[in-house]
Each structure stands twice: as C-alpha cells, then as structure tokens.
Image: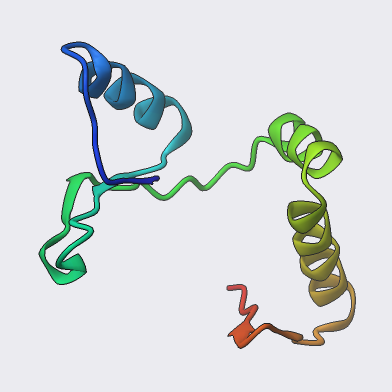
Length: 91
C-alpha cells in the first residue's frame, strides 16, 4: 500500500496489524520527491494463497478478475501474456 500521508495516533499500529494478517507492506510516498519515499512496513511473502479473499476480490474488481484469468491460463498452458507493458511471470 502506498500513501502520501498517514495520520492519527493509532493508524500506523492498525496498519501493522493488517499488514501482519495479509502480508502487504506500506510505503510512505514523498510526493514532491518520490525517490525519497520510505518503506514503513516491508511486505512479507505468503506461500499459502487465501482463495476466499481472491474470490471476493475477483467478484468486486474486474482488473483483479482478469489477472486471475491470466494466472489460470499460464498454469494451464504455460503461455505468458504481456499486459500494458507488464509481463506476468510466475515461479
């Protein structure tokens, strides 16, 4: 997750809890100088996929649904697609 501001006394504490649960990281974006942005909470690799969350996100987000379809196609065929300049490569 990237944010230019994080306010509130408990916000960072709550973000740490959410990040621990979901493995996402938090970057504080310096809008005027992006190269000065800081990683506040590093992301953690998760080896087990939460399929319930993936299904919910795919129902709610057309872009994520398309991404999941590309992942499925890759695993079934080995075919790699280029999508808006981004190559989907899976281990």
